[in-house]
Image 1 (cartoon, rainbow, N blue to C red):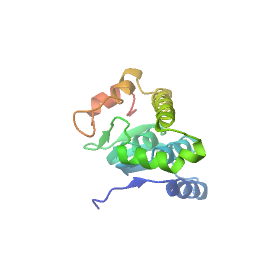
Image 2 (cartoon, rainbow, N blue to C red; image 1 turned 135 degrees about the vertical axis):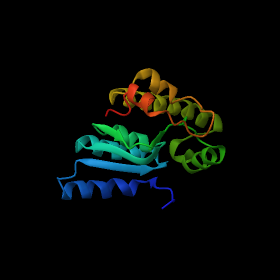
Image 3 (cartoon, rainbow, N blue to C red; image 1 turned 60 degrees about the vertical axis):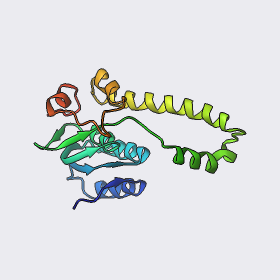
Length: 169
């Protein structure tokens, strides 16, 4: 219907409830422009735990790819797209996060926050690459997903996705 389908924490509980109620579900068809990184990883864990196949009918972008990679096998319809982009955090969101968490995290200065952010970014980058490789994605392809694309999203051709192990059938 043309509206963005964001991945949120509420989706995790809803999907868990649906999967527990119907053990006949074997394929998760996903169509999303992304959303929260952490809820997408929780959804991916459910996909793995319930041993679901995943299928993209239209588009799966950004954090949606985390959920998609949880599936085995992984398929996509002709004409569908799977999109990747570099991790980012805009200045306004960084400032809001710092102001919201500085007392709890005991950041005395913005420089202490910057130190934490630098370490956290490296951890997130490692975890993203590690997850992709563990799900059968070629390491060189996974590294390429970390670069800044020429546009806001990189949509590799089907043959590239299959050769890299993103799409498995």
